[in-house]
Image 1 (tube, helix red, strand yellow):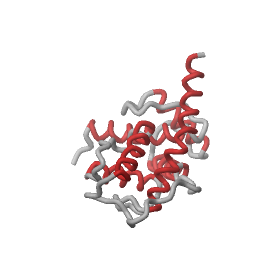
Image 2 (image 1 turned 180 degrees about the vertical axis):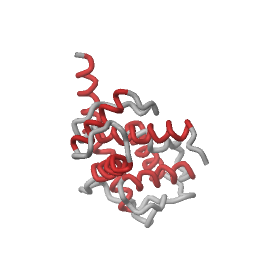
Image 3 (image 1 turned 90 degrees about the vertical axis):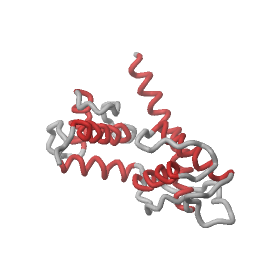
Image 4 (image 1 turned 45 degrees about the horizontal axis):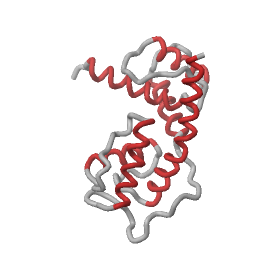
Length: 182
């Protein structure tokens, strides 16, 4: 099967999303995940390659791709700290679960989606549906949690920690916007 233009654009957008996330950790030029491998993406890739002591080409080969992805995963493995306690009375929330806790889970996922568009958008409706499970699985993938699509205590604490840490990401974005205006 041939590699289509759509697939190429999706892969470029995926690497741009990783680079965008990493720009909040490392000094990398900002990249907008638009699926176009333009000068900003080349600059970010070059800066990342230099930072990681890879051969600086501005192109994403297998070694660069793997290093970007692993750096992203390492950078966003959110440390656990004291958080609101996991709701009592259940071991996990999964497909078909309903109620107030599901509203909270969906609200957190939707807030995280606004900063990390690769995380699927969910409807905040109080029903743990397929879209919610998909978003939970995607979140579990980037945080190296066991991928179940269910919200266990570990996933709960990581979700809340990620939401708490969005303030740091928001400050970085605000600083970047202020720099652009000067």
